[in-house]
Image 1 (cartoon, rainbow, N blue to C red):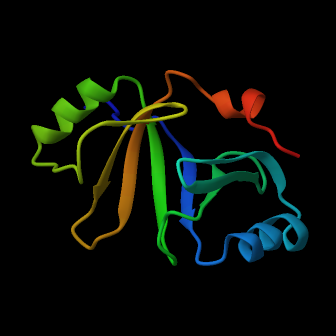
Image 2 (image 1 turned 180 degrees about the horizontal axis):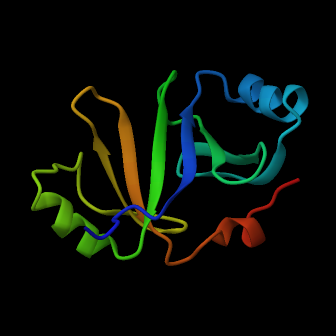
Length: 130
């Protein structure tokens, strides 16, 4: 059977105190800030703790939570294949800076997403704020 998920690219982490959590990752854990932005009422920062997957700290996501984001080759094909197996997404395809994405959950409520990297790591060159 062909592999649908290529690799884990991000761990999306919610925060109830962006500044404190940002300082924890950067100052306590010594993570490198890859990019950071504030747009559309959301603050998000990508941290490198030891290579990919990067930690994405997001103030618009409830805490505590973690969403594992996996890369797929073709999001429409992956969606079709998964739906054929009974998979149900948590909503429609939406765009993030790296490309189209779909959220989903397992039967226990653990959160995941699939992402087609049509603009891989675009924020690394255009949104670095440090």
